[in-house]
Each structure stands twice: as structure tokens, then as C-alpha cells.
Image (cartoon, rainbow, N blue to C red; front, top):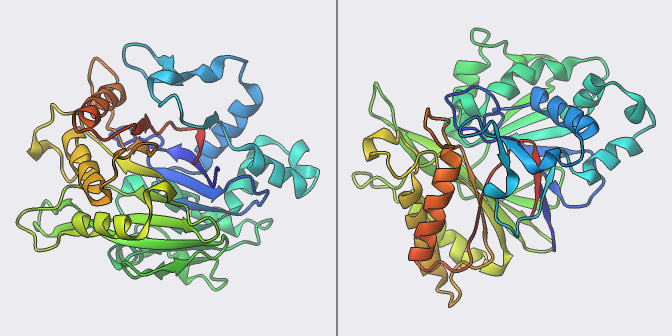
Length: 369
């Protein structure tokens, strides 16, 4: 049974600035215009493009996705597992919910439709405050003060995220402090690590976990990111949506990933784990010192192997969807996403992880998990 709809607004790991990480989440098949987002690296521009593509694409065009390496476009099946339930554009249930709000949506121009979809995003769960995870949200933020918009937005995150957003982004220097505006249409709220938080608009639980994401260039201090567990309270099904991450550092006293996988295995039966959206930024050829707080295929497979050991299932992680995000657009001959996907599948088979369904997160598409 499909429980979650995940629209990929952005999954790019840089250094190109287009379509960096942002995922829109909603319960499957519900005609509710309200949405939540994980990260805000992309936003209204990508929403507008998806609306235009949904209206103008010729039949058959949806079988090709942008690549810009060996060919400018490649067949979609090169990037996804054959069993992945995926659709180009916004989900039909979301578009239907907008139409039900009034006939004006059907007759509205593309920009007005874009505003209506964006207004529906009431809550952002930010993994960490790096620019490629917040830029769209920040630049889009003044739109909440449009006269036709009566909705507020809340930005959630662990203290390492919210403190930085308040002190160094919404500070009247980098960006106007819209959180201090009298109407309080934009709020920043802290979450506590490992503490269950009820989602404000869906019957979901949200559980954030702190993870490592490298060290500061100047200070050498640890940099942190966040993994979010979203659990549907009715079905008990879960998805995991990850920010940038590296393996636990040997010199650190914090075994954050080890603690996270232990929590997952103890609290989420494998049959209820619908999918993991997780980064794998660099191919196997990358040296450890070139990862800069990210994962390559060997390290991601190590983590999935640890999870497999904890579950101790005779079928491995069979049936689990792993959606790979944040691949860096390096100047290679071959699309790095295809290289990384090939390497991950080879290593997963070598480690006997079962029928693990590995796919690449494709911008402008919606997943049904």
C-alpha cells in the first residue's frame, strides 16, 4: 500500500546552483493542498517548471531526463529501479486538491498556480543550514506576505540549524529578519534530537537525529546535519529523509550513525520501512579527503550493511527502496549519477543485501512509497 508521496523539487549536490535539495511530502492519495518540505534548496522556480511541463510535455518526452554528459537527455530507466513507483510532475492528488479549491485554479496563469502550490507548504524541516539546502526557501520567503496569501510557514530544525538561520541568515544583513515581522508569518522553531514531534498538519510523527557532516575549514569543529524519520501513525509505515552525512569519525566520541541505525532496527519493522532518501555525493574513485563530509558508494553500502546486520533478516533488505540524492555534477565523461548507481548496485550484491531497490532521485518527479 502506498502511504507517502514525495515530490523531488531538487536533488542536485552542486556545484551547479540549479535544483539543490528540496523534497515535498504529503500522505498518498489525499486531496489536501497542505504540504511539508524537507530542506529548501529549491522552490518556486522548480514548481513553476513542473506545472509547465505537466501542461506542455508531448507524449513520450517523460521517458527522458536531463543528463548533459554522454547525451543531454537519457532514458529514465537508466536511473531507477524497475519496481519504483514514479510519476513525472506533481501528483494527481495534489493537483486535484488545488482544483477543488475553486475553478479559478484551472483558469489561472502558471505563476498564480505556482503561488498556490507554494502557499500549501506550511512546514519546512531543514537538515542543516548550508546554502544548497536553504537558498530557495530564503529567496522565496517574501512571497508569504503577498496579499492573497493568508497562510504562515514554520521552519523546524535541530538547534545547530535554527541558531544559524536566526543569527546568520534572517538577521537583516544577509536577509531581512522576516521572523521578527509583526504578523509572525514566518517562524523558526527548534526540535529536540531523538524526540517524537507530532506533525502539525498530517497524522505523522517526526523524529530528528543529529549526524556528522564533516568539520569546519577554519575551526576544525564538527559540522552536523539531520536525518528525519516520518512515521504514519495509522499504518506505522515510515520513510527516512537524510541530509548530508559522513560516516562516524573514529576520533569522535559520538557514534551518531550507529545510534541511528540501532534506533531504526529496534523501532521500525523492516516491512514498515518504505524507503530511505540518502545522499551519495561522490563515486568510488574519490579519495576520503575529497569527500568533505559526504558519502561515496563504499561508505553508504557500509551503513546499509550495518542496518542489514541489525535487522538480521534472512532476505536481507529485500524490497527496501533506497533513493540516492545529492550527487555532485562533476566534469566527468559519464553522468556521475549513473556511475554511482552502478557502483552501489554492484556493492549491494557483493554484500548480499537482498533485492535492494536502488534508484536516483530525479528532479521534477514524484515518488509513491
